[in-house]
Image 1 (cartoon, helix red, strand yellow):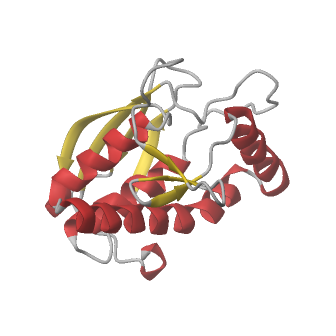
Image 2 (cartoon, rainbow, N blue to C red):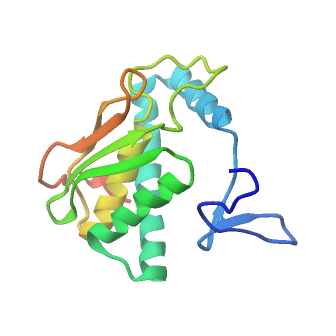
Image 3 (tube, rainbow, N blue to C red):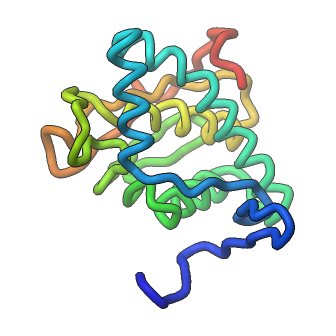
Length: 183
């Protein structure tokens, strides 16, 4: 999109050079930096431990973002989750498409095409489930939208490494009462 308007409004502080979008600080990083850092953590800890490490932080961050945007725009329930996924799409994380969304029941099914978490040229990342970071993000958004302290876990059940798109779903309606799942 050279010389065109960006899909999100970016504000740059003239004094500090810091970027923000919708009043939240942002950092523009190359995709390979993100993917290579995930690869390094996975190589050191293993994928399952890496997923645990990132899960709480991802859930808290999504919850915080939804709270910020809810206060700023007056959105709630399914509308805030839709807005969140739209913004993720506009910020280059992939193209997020909702198949099922019912925060009151903890139900979600989302497809992601062109995920920014897939291996890129120069990456040694060789995994069958590369986009698991999004699981926690969806959980945090669902948790905020439902107003409940725990929600049904979200799982990546198909990844774009081996398919045309990633797919994320909850195990079905229900609540997760695991205290560690709180933001």
